[in-house]
Length: 261
Image (cartoon, rainbow, N blue to C red; front, side, top):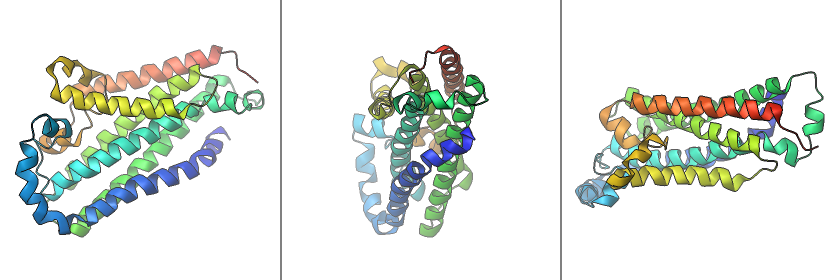
Protein backbone atom coordinates (compact mmCIF):
# COMPACT_ATOMS: atom_id res chain seq x y z
CA UNK A 1 0.00 0.00 0.00
CA UNK A 2 2.69 2.52 0.99
CA UNK A 3 4.88 1.63 -2.00
CA UNK A 4 1.98 2.05 -4.46
CA UNK A 5 0.87 5.28 -2.81
CA UNK A 6 4.33 6.80 -3.22
CA UNK A 7 4.34 5.81 -6.87
CA UNK A 8 0.96 7.46 -7.40
CA UNK A 9 2.19 10.51 -5.53
CA UNK A 10 5.33 10.96 -7.63
CA UNK A 11 4.22 9.56 -11.00
CA UNK A 12 3.31 12.97 -12.44
CA UNK A 13 6.54 14.49 -11.12
CA UNK A 14 8.53 11.65 -12.69
CA UNK A 15 6.80 12.15 -16.03
CA UNK A 16 7.38 15.90 -16.05
CA UNK A 17 11.06 15.68 -15.13
CA UNK A 18 11.71 12.79 -17.52
CA UNK A 19 10.12 14.65 -20.43
CA UNK A 20 11.95 17.89 -19.62
CA UNK A 21 15.40 16.46 -18.87
CA UNK A 22 15.56 13.49 -21.21
CA UNK A 23 13.52 15.15 -23.94
CA UNK A 24 15.92 18.09 -23.90
CA UNK A 25 19.07 16.05 -24.39
CA UNK A 26 17.38 13.87 -27.01
CA UNK A 27 16.68 17.01 -29.06
CA UNK A 28 20.29 18.13 -28.47
CA UNK A 29 21.55 14.80 -29.83
CA UNK A 30 19.37 15.11 -32.93
CA UNK A 31 20.99 18.48 -33.60
CA UNK A 32 24.50 17.00 -33.60
CA UNK A 33 24.69 16.19 -37.36
CA UNK A 34 24.02 19.86 -38.16
CA UNK A 35 26.54 21.00 -35.55
CA UNK A 36 29.23 18.39 -36.29
CA UNK A 37 31.40 20.55 -38.58
CA UNK A 38 31.08 23.58 -36.33
CA UNK A 39 31.99 21.52 -33.26
CA UNK A 40 35.11 20.20 -34.98
CA UNK A 41 36.25 23.76 -35.61
CA UNK A 42 35.78 24.91 -32.00
CA UNK A 43 36.89 21.68 -30.29
CA UNK A 44 40.53 22.78 -30.03
CA UNK A 45 39.45 26.21 -28.81
CA UNK A 46 37.39 24.68 -26.01
CA UNK A 47 40.29 22.45 -25.00
CA UNK A 48 42.56 25.45 -24.49
CA UNK A 49 40.29 27.62 -22.37
CA UNK A 50 42.13 26.80 -19.16
CA UNK A 51 40.03 26.56 -16.01
CA UNK A 52 36.79 26.71 -17.97
CA UNK A 53 37.76 23.64 -20.00
CA UNK A 54 38.83 21.74 -16.88
CA UNK A 55 35.64 22.60 -15.00
CA UNK A 56 33.40 21.20 -17.74
CA UNK A 57 35.67 18.37 -18.85
CA UNK A 58 36.26 19.87 -22.28
CA UNK A 59 40.01 19.40 -21.90
CA UNK A 60 39.44 15.62 -22.01
CA UNK A 61 36.61 15.19 -24.50
CA UNK A 62 36.41 16.14 -28.17
CA UNK A 63 32.95 17.64 -28.64
CA UNK A 64 33.35 17.18 -32.38
CA UNK A 65 32.70 13.44 -31.89
CA UNK A 66 29.36 11.93 -30.93
CA UNK A 67 30.84 10.53 -27.70
CA UNK A 68 32.36 13.88 -26.74
CA UNK A 69 29.15 15.71 -27.59
CA UNK A 70 27.17 13.14 -25.58
CA UNK A 71 29.45 13.49 -22.58
CA UNK A 72 29.46 17.29 -22.64
CA UNK A 73 25.81 18.07 -23.27
CA UNK A 74 23.90 14.96 -22.21
CA UNK A 75 26.29 14.64 -19.25
CA UNK A 76 25.57 18.17 -18.04
CA UNK A 77 21.80 18.05 -18.59
CA UNK A 78 21.32 14.61 -17.03
CA UNK A 79 23.68 15.26 -14.13
CA UNK A 80 22.11 18.54 -13.06
CA UNK A 81 18.51 17.77 -13.99
CA UNK A 82 18.54 14.23 -12.63
CA UNK A 83 20.39 15.33 -9.51
CA UNK A 84 17.83 18.03 -8.78
CA UNK A 85 14.97 15.58 -9.38
CA UNK A 86 16.47 12.94 -7.04
CA UNK A 87 17.27 15.41 -4.28
CA UNK A 88 13.85 17.03 -4.56
CA UNK A 89 11.81 13.84 -4.15
CA UNK A 90 14.18 12.66 -1.41
CA UNK A 91 13.70 15.78 0.70
CA UNK A 92 9.92 15.51 0.45
CA UNK A 93 9.23 11.80 0.97
CA UNK A 94 9.06 11.86 4.79
CA UNK A 95 8.51 15.53 5.56
CA UNK A 96 5.34 15.68 3.45
CA UNK A 97 3.50 13.46 5.96
CA UNK A 98 3.91 16.03 8.73
CA UNK A 99 3.63 19.03 6.43
CA UNK A 100 0.42 17.65 4.91
CA UNK A 101 -0.95 16.50 8.29
CA UNK A 102 -1.27 12.88 7.12
CA UNK A 103 1.22 11.37 9.59
CA UNK A 104 -1.50 10.73 12.18
CA UNK A 105 -3.41 8.52 9.72
CA UNK A 106 -0.40 6.85 8.08
CA UNK A 107 1.14 5.61 11.29
CA UNK A 108 -2.10 4.14 12.58
CA UNK A 109 -1.89 1.53 9.81
CA UNK A 110 -0.89 -2.01 10.84
CA UNK A 111 2.76 -1.46 9.87
CA UNK A 112 5.73 -0.49 11.98
CA UNK A 113 7.15 2.96 11.43
CA UNK A 114 10.40 1.43 10.23
CA UNK A 115 8.53 -0.70 7.69
CA UNK A 116 6.73 2.33 6.29
CA UNK A 117 9.96 4.34 5.97
CA UNK A 118 11.77 1.48 4.22
CA UNK A 119 8.90 1.07 1.75
CA UNK A 120 9.03 4.80 1.03
CA UNK A 121 12.78 4.52 0.40
CA UNK A 122 12.27 1.57 -1.94
CA UNK A 123 9.64 3.55 -3.84
CA UNK A 124 12.03 6.48 -4.26
CA UNK A 125 14.81 4.11 -5.42
CA UNK A 126 12.50 2.47 -7.97
CA UNK A 127 11.34 5.85 -9.29
CA UNK A 128 14.95 6.92 -9.80
CA UNK A 129 15.71 3.57 -11.46
CA UNK A 130 12.89 4.10 -13.96
CA UNK A 131 14.14 7.63 -14.62
CA UNK A 132 17.65 6.30 -15.32
CA UNK A 133 16.54 3.38 -17.52
CA UNK A 134 14.37 5.66 -19.65
CA UNK A 135 17.24 8.16 -19.79
CA UNK A 136 19.70 5.54 -21.00
CA UNK A 137 17.22 4.27 -23.62
CA UNK A 138 16.59 7.81 -24.89
CA UNK A 139 20.33 8.53 -25.04
CA UNK A 140 21.17 5.32 -26.93
CA UNK A 141 18.28 5.93 -29.33
CA UNK A 142 19.62 9.41 -29.98
CA UNK A 143 23.17 8.30 -30.80
CA UNK A 144 21.82 5.43 -32.93
CA UNK A 145 19.88 7.97 -35.00
CA UNK A 146 22.75 10.44 -35.48
CA UNK A 147 25.36 7.71 -36.05
CA UNK A 148 29.13 7.98 -35.59
CA UNK A 149 31.61 5.97 -33.57
CA UNK A 150 30.62 5.23 -29.99
CA UNK A 151 30.71 2.42 -27.45
CA UNK A 152 27.35 1.26 -26.10
CA UNK A 153 29.12 -0.30 -23.10
CA UNK A 154 30.81 3.00 -22.18
CA UNK A 155 27.58 4.98 -22.54
CA UNK A 156 25.77 2.46 -20.33
CA UNK A 157 28.60 2.68 -17.79
CA UNK A 158 28.12 6.45 -17.73
CA UNK A 159 24.42 5.98 -16.98
CA UNK A 160 25.24 3.50 -14.21
CA UNK A 161 27.43 6.18 -12.62
CA UNK A 162 24.58 8.67 -12.97
CA UNK A 163 22.17 6.30 -11.26
CA UNK A 164 24.55 5.79 -8.33
CA UNK A 165 25.03 9.54 -8.02
CA UNK A 166 21.30 10.25 -8.09
CA UNK A 167 20.61 7.57 -5.48
CA UNK A 168 23.23 9.13 -3.23
CA UNK A 169 21.67 12.58 -3.63
CA UNK A 170 18.24 11.11 -2.90
CA UNK A 171 19.58 9.47 0.29
CA UNK A 172 20.94 12.81 1.49
CA UNK A 173 17.54 14.32 0.76
CA UNK A 174 15.80 11.54 2.70
CA UNK A 175 18.05 12.19 5.69
CA UNK A 176 17.10 15.87 5.63
CA UNK A 177 13.45 14.91 5.22
CA UNK A 178 13.63 12.77 8.37
CA UNK A 179 14.72 15.78 10.42
CA UNK A 180 12.27 18.35 9.02
CA UNK A 181 8.55 18.84 9.51
CA UNK A 182 7.76 20.62 6.25
CA UNK A 183 8.66 19.96 2.63
CA UNK A 184 11.40 22.29 1.48
CA UNK A 185 12.05 21.71 -2.21
CA UNK A 186 14.59 24.52 -2.27
CA UNK A 187 16.89 22.61 0.08
CA UNK A 188 16.93 19.60 -2.25
CA UNK A 189 17.61 21.70 -5.32
CA UNK A 190 20.28 23.64 -3.44
CA UNK A 191 22.09 20.46 -2.39
CA UNK A 192 22.24 19.20 -5.97
CA UNK A 193 23.56 22.52 -7.27
CA UNK A 194 26.09 22.79 -4.44
CA UNK A 195 27.44 19.31 -5.17
CA UNK A 196 27.72 20.16 -8.88
CA UNK A 197 29.57 23.37 -8.03
CA UNK A 198 31.97 21.48 -5.75
CA UNK A 199 32.74 19.05 -8.56
CA UNK A 200 33.70 21.90 -10.89
CA UNK A 201 35.78 23.66 -8.25
CA UNK A 202 37.61 20.45 -7.27
CA UNK A 203 38.76 20.10 -10.89
CA UNK A 204 40.04 23.67 -11.12
CA UNK A 205 41.50 24.46 -7.68
CA UNK A 206 44.13 22.23 -6.07
CA UNK A 207 43.06 23.51 -2.66
CA UNK A 208 39.61 21.95 -3.19
CA UNK A 209 40.72 18.56 -4.55
CA UNK A 210 39.47 16.98 -1.33
CA UNK A 211 35.93 17.87 -2.41
CA UNK A 212 35.99 14.94 -4.84
CA UNK A 213 35.38 12.74 -1.78
CA UNK A 214 32.32 14.83 -0.88
CA UNK A 215 30.48 15.31 -4.16
CA UNK A 216 29.03 12.33 -6.06
CA UNK A 217 29.22 14.34 -9.28
CA UNK A 218 32.96 13.63 -9.36
CA UNK A 219 32.84 9.84 -9.84
CA UNK A 220 29.87 10.14 -12.24
CA UNK A 221 31.41 12.87 -14.40
CA UNK A 222 31.10 12.02 -18.09
CA UNK A 223 34.55 13.40 -18.94
CA UNK A 224 36.13 10.81 -16.63
CA UNK A 225 33.86 7.81 -17.24
CA UNK A 226 33.72 8.07 -21.03
CA UNK A 227 37.42 8.86 -21.48
CA UNK A 228 38.84 6.44 -18.91
CA UNK A 229 36.11 3.87 -19.67
CA UNK A 230 35.65 3.14 -15.98
CA UNK A 231 34.20 4.55 -12.77
CA UNK A 232 36.56 5.37 -9.91
CA UNK A 233 35.62 2.49 -7.60
CA UNK A 234 37.24 4.12 -4.57
CA UNK A 235 35.07 7.22 -4.87
CA UNK A 236 32.06 5.09 -5.73
CA UNK A 237 32.63 3.10 -2.51
CA UNK A 238 32.73 6.36 -0.54
CA UNK A 239 29.43 7.32 -2.16
CA UNK A 240 27.97 3.93 -1.25
CA UNK A 241 28.96 4.39 2.38
CA UNK A 242 27.42 7.88 2.43
CA UNK A 243 24.19 6.48 0.97
CA UNK A 244 23.93 3.68 3.53
CA UNK A 245 24.79 5.96 6.46
CA UNK A 246 22.20 8.53 5.38
CA UNK A 247 19.46 5.91 5.02
CA UNK A 248 20.23 4.10 8.28
CA UNK A 249 20.41 7.41 10.17
CA UNK A 250 17.12 8.54 8.61
CA UNK A 251 15.39 5.29 9.64
CA UNK A 252 16.80 5.42 13.16
CA UNK A 253 15.88 9.05 13.75
CA UNK A 254 12.41 8.84 12.19
CA UNK A 255 11.61 5.74 14.23
CA UNK A 256 12.12 7.77 17.42
CA UNK A 257 10.80 11.11 16.20
CA UNK A 258 7.76 12.80 17.75
CA UNK A 259 5.56 13.30 14.73
CA UNK A 260 3.31 16.31 14.26
CA UNK A 261 -0.29 15.35 13.54
